[in-house]
Image 1 (cartoon, rainbow, N blue to C red):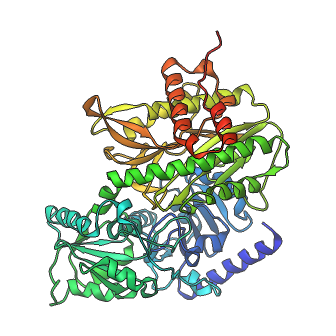
Image 2 (cartoon, rainbow, N blue to C red; image 1 turned 180 degrees about the vertical axis):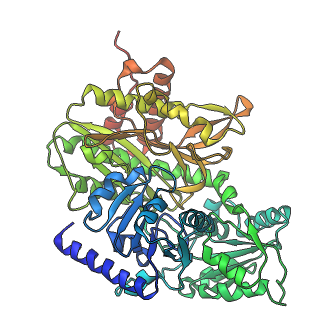
Image 3 (tube, rainbow, N blue to C red; image 1 turned 90 degrees about the vertical axis):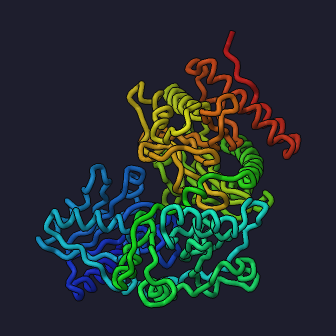
Length: 604
């Protein structure tokens, strides 16, 4: 951090503390989230970044009168050290439950008042915070206006981009049919209405997409779905076009975004909605929404978002569109990795060069929209930072002998992609090859798994870790996350990790991405996306079908560590990659791809 940036951060802390003092607060919690609780936030909601410099997608700061800290999980330990000024903030990795509250209690006065913005925390989060602070003799206090906004003089304006209509041929199911499905879910649950707060669920339900956030085609909005199959849609009026209004049809009533609070009065007064059973998802929705309902005397209760579960299971049209998107992405990545192989040898590349060239190759593809997340291009030690993001200060020269990790994805009009490969530049060490192959074995174990219906992501997570754990190694992130259909690259509703306890179901699109990281040396991650599908040989069993199309670096594979089944899977996968991509490549790129996908053979 430069001296200028240190001064800016110091001034902001001083200004915030002055506001907190005026409001008689002993501290304030600054989360990464906005009121929609998503991974990405618009520029106007980047409060954590603005206050601390930390840009990770998960974390929060706690500002007290004389101390401040930034907290995140183990994915961001190195990044916090690099981005957060330790003269102003402690950078703390949350390695045990409630560690942040112990820190608050040790630095704030007994009985202290800790403020929070109820729009920026879910109902579940607030309940947890209140319980933990109460146990430590502290008090959690909701503020009416965010004090960070009060001192943020040049805070950007909220986004106003127009809504995009999503092609029914790609969506597969009409708005009306989706509303009927959710209406039936509500009737089955004996609920009259459900308040949708997750923008990806609203986008899926109404077959729309938006441009309010980087990398994620959401429309920041709210919706109330009723058991009669109608929906009230709350959105910034400037985002609506005449075409979009006509497209949404007569079962969708459109309201201004700010009308939601007044509309809730309908559930409490003598008007037509009075006495209805209202529900919303406490894990996705803000405490502010709960306050709005409670202060108006509306009866409400928690219900898991019914759209989330349906959205996670892709239909035939969605699957076909996603497969098409992955062919495009595979073509772009084939051209990209050929370029890397030929160019990196000269030692003149930087991480930023690689990032820019990757974007250019994807831009060549039909209907490319944007990245699906900020790409991770990590050379050597930077590759060990799980969510690394290259900056002017960290931009490394790619030269010498080490590994290059590239985790990237794209948004095409027909699907979302997410792919990671790790390649060798120069000569890899035996340890690099061993660790790469153990990660590859874990990847293959997931890709080739067959499992009974009812199996959860937690049940099979160990398949990916077993080969690393045999030698005392592991990785600190989940093995797989759900992926949307031209929506969020990190989608709730599906996953492979110790935390995912729901059954895997046909149509779910999930990443398969084990890894290994040597801090300060190199990182390895190998990621494809897979669909859950029925096993054609056994109706009681499920399996995965890999949809990503990118070869693995042959120079890093220790063939002696692979068994016959693993070799067969790898050779069949590479065969499928060549078959799918070669018709879309010129002869030069075909020749390169053919070499990369040739069958691996054991030495006689």
